[in-house]
Every structure is written in C-alpha cells, then in structure tokens.
Amino acid sequence: MLNIIDKDIYTEKGELLKTIDCPKKVSLKDLRTDKDKTLYCKNCEKNILNTEHMSEDKLIEILKKDKDTCLKISRLNPMFRFV
Amino acid sequence: MSDIEIQNNENLRVIKTIREKDYNRYSLSAEDRDKNYLITKTIEPNEDFFSRRMVLQNYKTGEIIKVTDRKMYVQYGEEVNYPYEQWKELLTYQIYQGSKKDLYTWAMYLVPKDAKNGERFYIEDIIGDIVAERFWSGIYRAKNGVGIWNGKDLEIDESLYEETFLVG
Image (cartoon, rainbow over all chains, first blue to last red; front, side, top):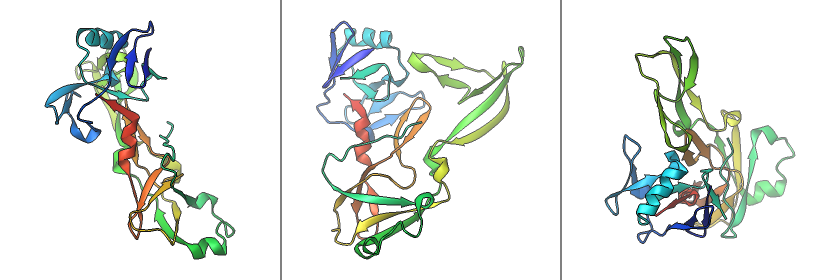
C-alpha cells in the first residue's frame, strides 16, 4: 500500500515517489477518457495515468523513472492510504 | 455500495429532507410549513446509474459467469478477456446502481423562506441519485452535498465531488 500524506506519495518504506501538485489546478472536467480508458488532459495536451486499473508495483516502477508523470487517484482506491 | 459523503466545511445552513417512507401527518409542524418552501420531487432513475452486465457461457467447459463486458479491467492492473469464440452470450442486461429503494417515491426539501438567490445550503440527504464518483465498475451516489438556491429549487454543486480525486 502507498501512503499519501498531504500531497506526497510514499512507499511503505517511506520513500517519496511523487508530489501531486498540478500547477494548472486541473479538474475532472479538463480530462477526457478515450476508448482504451486512457486519460488525456486537455490543458497540458498529454496523457494522465489512471491509477484505477494499475498495480502498485507498476506504478512505483513508473514513478521511479519519472516523478513528473501525472496521475489520477481516487480516494476509493485501496492501493492508497490517505494519512 | 456506500454513498459518498462530504462535510459541511463552509458552515452553511442545513436543509432538512423528508422522504415518503418517513412521512406521516406529524412530520411537518405548522411552523415548518409556514417558514419553509416545500420543494417536493418524485424520485426517478438517473440514466447515469445504469450499467451493463452480461451472462456468458464457456463453449468448452459449460461454465457460466457474470461480467461487465467481454473485456474487463480487474483489480490491480490487468484486463481479462472473454472472446466470442470461447464464450457464448446468454444474456445482456442492465442494473441500476443508484438507490433503488427510493425509486418512484417522493421526498421534499425544507428551504427557509428567507433564502436568498445564490445562497448555498448544506443538504444532509440529497433527493435522487447524483453521481459523486465512478471507480472500477461501481457508480457511487452522493449522500449529501451543497445546494444553491435559485429562487425555485436547489441546484447541487457537483464540483465538490471532484475532491474525491487527486489529479497532478
């Protein structure tokens, strides 16, 4: 399980993976869901990773490669613990 | 499936809701009737809460399963496929993921007669089904929220449910 403290995402070992901080304050209205469930941000014109259908290991791997990857996280997702 | 709740963080005046199932001749006092607009609504299904389900049978094993689609996303990442050549479709149907028990009944909001146009109120029990969140195959309704008085009705501020997501 990943911990989210304020807007920081940490692994269970306490390693900071990413800070969720959209400078453009994107809301759901700014996102488009494509047929293959890809999320596209109309503000930045780039894809957003929807963590809804993603494994924890895969997400950690992606964020370790690129902390600037944009994410969409639901508070209902049991992969995350909101502290 | 539990409803999504938000708090009265703006310290707004609270709107009381009376539902048909709880109503009797003593539910409203004379003061309630005199000092409030009684905004009464029937509760009908919201199209957004219907979702598809399928019953499939495996040609080879005879196994019967219930799925949301021939291609399903499952927990933690992977997708499962039920191809036409392996699975016969026995049935496609729709389920309603809103609050079925309240459908085709009525309910009313008690809005104070001194409400100003544009005033925001906290509604503890929203009448009808409003989508607060979608996650995996679930559609979650809003239990409570903020309504803005427009002189005739309360318009629900749906932007507040976006707080159930983080984006960035």
